[in-house]
Length: 114
Length: 114
Image (cartoon, rainbow over all chains, first blue to last red):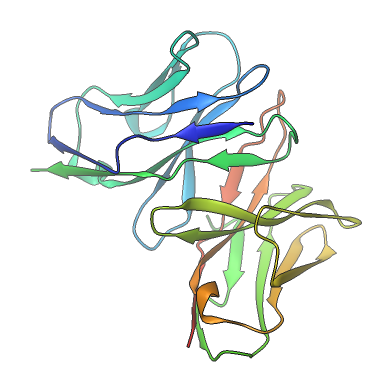
């Protein structure tokens, strides 16, 4: 069965420091992986996705994610955090049993302190 | 987010009442989804639709029903609301490019059942 795990409920980072939000997955077949961000009182916004090709995927707002097949991970990263990056981040994987469905992780709250 | 709209944005109702949440989209996507979000549980899929004639149950469809009135409209109904249906509800659409179904979310409806 497909699944996605975000092992950290919360990540705290000082502004200007690099940040990493972790995600691991379990899928049958080729993985299709996504990151979404949710700001307060807003819907989720698409950040980036991995389909195939380069393991480092670049997305919106300066975020990038590294696909690691051997470790089944898809960690979200940013070289220099901003206070405005504080939000709830969701990793997701396409459901292998139904190409139209997405399975979401439980979310990681990122807090950037000034 | 403006491409996917939800009404109402907030609703407080009583146990046993019938409630309808509405979703409209201008993205031209065939695929539409209803999710609920609960703290610590991420997003869980209630129903999804590939087109006007296609409706599919998600992982938590009990107590809910949907109607796809047109390509652009997908409504969610709670026939007899109960307190544990208090949650944040999101409508989403998706494209399907290179096998990846990127989702685009509405702003959400906060439903409280007393």
